[in-house]
Image (cartoon, rainbow, N blue to C red; front, side, top):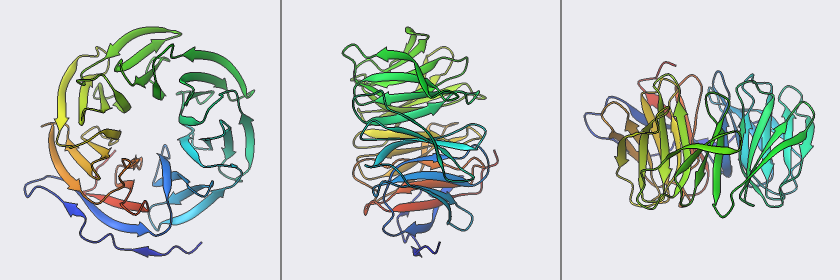
Amino acid sequence: MTLTTIFAGLALIAPAQSAVTLKPIKTVMGVRPLAMAAAPTGTRFAASLENNTIRVYDVVNMKVVRVLIGHPVPAYAVAWHPKGQMIASGDESARIFLWDIKTGAKVKEMRTHIRGIQNLSFDASGNFLLSTGKDDVVKVYDIRTGKEIRTIKGNGANFYSATYTPGGGFSVATLGDGIRAYAGAKVAKKYTAHSDKAVWDFDFHTPTNRLISAGRDGTAAVFDLKGAKRLNSLKGHEDWVVHVRITPNGRYAVTGSTDRTVRLWDLKTYKPAGVVENMTTVGSPIAITANGQYVAAVNMDDWLQVFELVPRQAK
């Protein structure tokens, strides 16, 4: 498929002494991503779009390698299977689809939430899928059978971005209780650092034992993953931090905010390494390719924009 691409212009601002920068390389006009997820290896990522489709891109030449068609309404959640052969997507009608990447066929459909899906996460084995619904319920599905096997209710808490974490448990961002780490159906610990305890998203990096939360107070908080102790805060955004991703080598983080910026952070110094302006007003979703070389985001026109990390970051 031929794509119309343009250079991203002069959107980049970076401190003069920054060791790494985000270099804009392509903008794909008319392609409006709602959620994105990087493949577990290589240079591919999946983007769910406003037109109800899921596209799989290879960043090397921005080729569309697969288009997944079947959602009746837009999907706001997408996740890549850890072995790479499958993608999960969840839409506003509460449908969750499992797709075979090689064929593009829908292989399973689950629909037990009563409101739209806002986040999906596979466990390390790839046998289980965690879903976060706008009904403030987290559900666990066995993807081998397509059956729901567990439900965790918010009981008054707003749930966002439930994600499997090391050891088989999962953590979930909440609107007023920070990040809850669950062991089974019980809360084992909490990550709290934001002034209003409101968190939209988080990411973690097991080798460096870090978890980073995206807060409504305009900061991203860095925690000790195992102990839940706050190590530092990433300060510089002027509005909600909505999305955060850590580079595969654990050296940098990228955040998307409703202040219309995407920011690059040095996780050794906890200082900003670069700022990209004129991004989407709703807070850009972020995908960082598994090889650590590219970042996908969404600009002020709500179009897909791709950056290169310079110098390239080894995994």
